[in-house]
Length: 292
Image 1 (cartoon, helix red, strand yellow):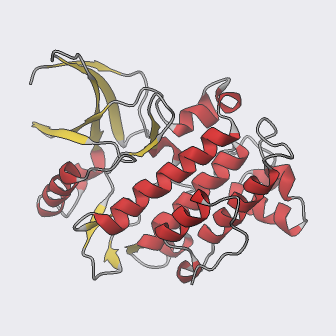
Image 2 (cartoon, helix red, strand yellow; image 1 turned 180 degrees about the vertical axis):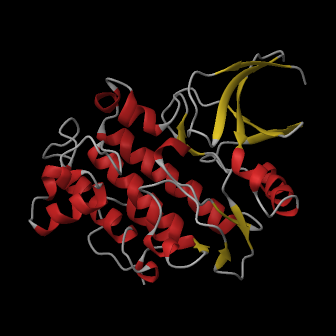
């Protein structure tokens, strides 16, 4: 396959990996995204782990995953070829595009949360072997032309056998999304991905970054700020005013409760992906939560 590459102006994550858009010279002139997952170059698990992961990802077929179409090795570079997503990342719409937050109404944001949960559930429960993503964040949730969510960027992902509960790992991830237990033990678990997903839910509700040093000191850390506002019974003040209204308030408060369950410091009390799907898909009838 002949490819014509044009490097995009911006990295997905500085010093970690580059995102390219390219044109496949086929009859339909379809576009794909080219990712250079830098962590794979340094991984002590190469070549066995990354080879198995590529094989697993190439077989993964789910409507809420960015499909891996191919793999290219050139000198020291490793390039992953994904289906191109027309609307870019959730991070772009929430935090970078000038009119992005106003363009994403509550219905669209809830749809994104529902789709991302389904993609994560597929990785955790349906892939063989299962996959821990280890870098769930808004910039790794890509949106197609219908704003449907697709999990992407598996440069930090690890395979996990169905009968295992964790894998030994280096401390990796993105500041603001890393679960607290990862700093205490060198293990990655399903519940670590759930924690990061909870941070994404807060982003969808507030349109704020997990860490933002430009905000007042009391609200620089999104998780701590939301927890404080909840203690003060001021939950509705955390919501993005562009999407908050009385009609959607019950749903938004429910999603806030789901996010807080995901962010519990005790991993064992966090919900599993199937619980998340059930709660989010039945948002209007969800009133009690049992994450046991």
